[in-house]
Length: 174
Image (cartoon, rainbow, N blue to C red; front, top):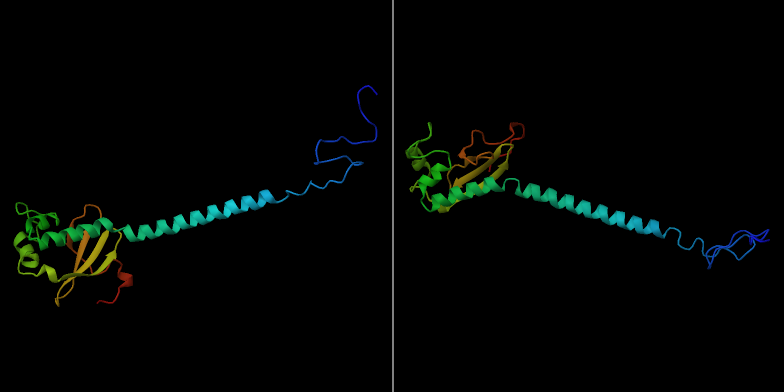
């Protein structure tokens, strides 16, 4: 037998891994079975958990900050009124003294928001998210609440033409 084959024996591998049918028992063959599956499942669970946390945080951030610019514009308007910068506050309505709004001239603006009003008694009662902006309802002391509109597109302010965004779901007043 010049080729080196032994008749009746299956091929053998080195070490303790696998032996032929007439050799030692296959003791180490199934030792590591399933270890890769456990590791893969642990990685998958951690990945799903991380994606879930990212989704929840992103959703909460969206609902907390979706009206941030509009609310900041309203705060800026109230701050301008507190510091008696009425011309700048009137400009936030998209109007100037030189080019007043058609239905809301500067004198009417001053009678509504001017020095006769105590801006320190101003409080924001309610803020509603709408598709194209927000409605912020403000109140001066014991006076009737006033709904203000802040447009999402250009951040211009005005009186809200309606008290709520969706007329089907009207909320009770304060």
